[in-house]
Length: 351
Image 1 (cartoon, rainbow, N blue to C red):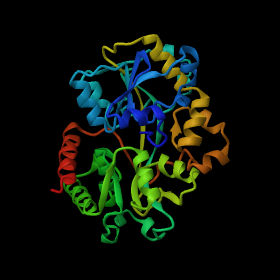
Image 2: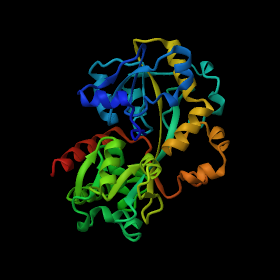
Image 3: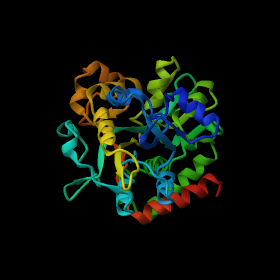
């Protein structure tokens, strides 16, 4: 959704000085999740142009949407499946010309709801993965890690962290109440999901905004149990921390797919925009995001070429069953998502 675990020195410096952008090639502005400015995602672009694009960052898609509606200009942005219909209907994104994307035939998820409309491609899928229960294996029992109900267990008061992200939060709330398709949920299901999140709020130490923050909290032992993206266990295990993700809890986990969109009236170079997306779709980018971040790549053939051992190591043993028993973060009706946004703000404020 969402890579934030491995943040470049430039990004850290920007955050510390209160900025919101990494300035580089002024001819291409990318509005993205922090961490995706990593050059290894788009090496061919850097090799061709000698610099990375200029980046501005968001921590939540609603924040990004509102900033764009308020007049912020970028050439591309990186929303996920549950938001793209809203962005298209708001008139802030326009179709890509897939004839300028040589690897397009190798890309999966283009048929995800809202990504392609009447033959027009509004989203180029690049990454996919899970949000699941992630825990310190030395401090949390296997029984506690086997159920999402542990998030609301008073014994974890002050030791829980949830993403400051309405979609991931409500995915947890619905799953905890046995709902795996939020588009089939009733008003009662929404209320039950909200009530569960209120119970969890009593245990929350912090709502994390990026994976680097969460990793620090879990490494120190301040947070024992989190609702996290797939990058967290992969990057923390690489650093030697006893952290695992259980995607097979009693209630399941959540899955998502994200991609780049072409912003209306982008101020930069269209040629560089296509150079950027083509670099992202190369096999070496797939290898990097899978092996170093634990996310899937939209070029599934490139993923398969890594070999079964490499895929098993980061949880991609079987593409066909990856979404079994999960809540897939599909686009939501406008009214329901607005209710979620309003209610989540109340919950975080303690109401």
